[in-house]
Length: 385
Image 1 (cartoon, helix red, strand yellow):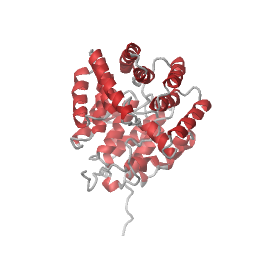
Image 2 (spheres, rainbow, N blue to C red; image 1 turned 60 degrees about the horizontal axis):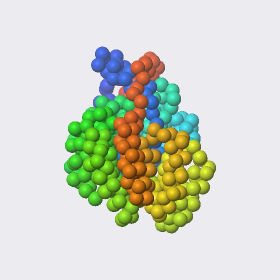
Image 3 (tube, one colour; image 1 turned 90 degrees about the vertical axis):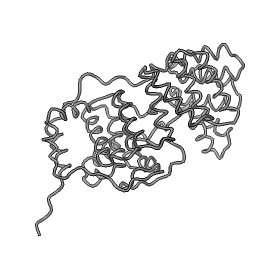
Image 4 (cartoon, one colour; image 1 turned 60 degrees about the vertical axis):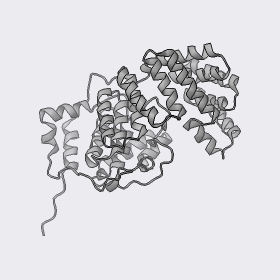
């Protein structure tokens, strides 16, 4: 894997206020205002970590800002105190810690700090905080313009905000910096194209991904759903069942299931007990119910799995993942017609399962906002010798 040997830093002499008030850039800053955001998985794809930014299993800690283009940066970001607080659910403290990063010249030189702070600030309900979050993410791009991982995270944040066109551009920029066999951004972009009703582009990208990972069961399932969305329901269902059977026959657990099993020393019964207790404590959390259902399916407790999925459906029937797992459950129960019906519902709902478009009213940065950025961007004058 190629590593970057350095970074391109913005010129110290730049006057950000003058730049922000030029016609082109003032529009860009305004467009970085208040958008809907959720910390949940960046795209509805084979599971990406629900909280934090860790996106692929096996990624360890430590990322050097001078060599940011390495696959270890996700854990580094999740270890930033602001992100730790967010993951713990201490949102107000997390936002305060993120603002401290944004106000530190030293920390603003580190893309890991910038990505963590920007992501945290985008969870705020306040338009000003969202604006600041976008500013910090864009700063991370300027600090590490050749990092595919920085661009990947930025693309995910754009998608979460409903900025579909911007997200597509950033994903494509990420691919331009990436090796041809890197599946993650290709899979996410394929799903984004599907949700953006760009069927031909989605099909082409999914074919690339399947060629790279022909035996990955979850990719095969996603490919099947995409085929159905693209009006090939029977062919898509067959591909989906192929992936589903492969997943459970190996067995090859979904990442969130594997994580629970690993946390219980490989004992799936203990994982099921823990997941059931978690559902009992959080009865309205449909994602916990879906995870429990996946665990139960993996040990062929299909009736119990269906009960959990039925409960989840009562709470949010329009969630496509519920119907996807229900289709798998019926398939394992040898109920082909019911499995096909649930699969068809998944394909119908999937394109609708995307973040809301950003509101028309954008946050207009104040003079204080812009002046603070100008001061932080300007290199301090060196004392006379």
